[in-house]
Length: 174
Ligand code: GTP
Ligand code: MG
Image (cartoon, rainbow, N blue to C red):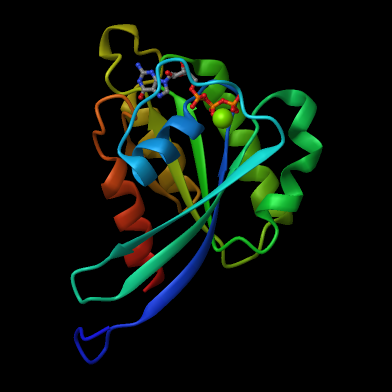
């Protein structure tokens, strides 16, 4: 790649998990296409997208992204997507305590059944909706720290921290 001598090309399987409506598909759309869709439709089964980024040292990281469906009826499919994943991004909506509880369920499920060296990130999305916030940032910080996870709040709507999320995950892998 013509970069630094220690530059690498990584391929990373990443899965997004979390309650329906928390904004998983919007996070992926923002990251991959730089767009936001206020009329985003619920995901059926799962969808696949990929995106490559370059890090400071010229290492490239190709993310192979599985965007899972959060509706309860698809919960049994999740292992198909998180099995073998190097990274799990577990998303909740900062305006929804129920979605924060659901995120904790996914963390426990991955601790039991995910790859033992999986990198987990906890993401509080919809950070643009500060006036409707019901999950304090500190609750996310504390839970992530207890479980050895990376934590960030994002907004797929404003693009706030979306690239940072994927860059931070990359740095932990490279
Ligand atoms: P499932 O596919 O059912 O699991 O849902 P999902 O997590 O993929 O949710 P999706 O990305 O489809 O977003 C659900 C709704 O939340 C849509 O109406 C989005 O426009 C809205 N939304 C997503 N991200 C944000 C955000 O950062 N801020 C705001 N204000 N709305 C958002
Ligand atoms: Mg979706």
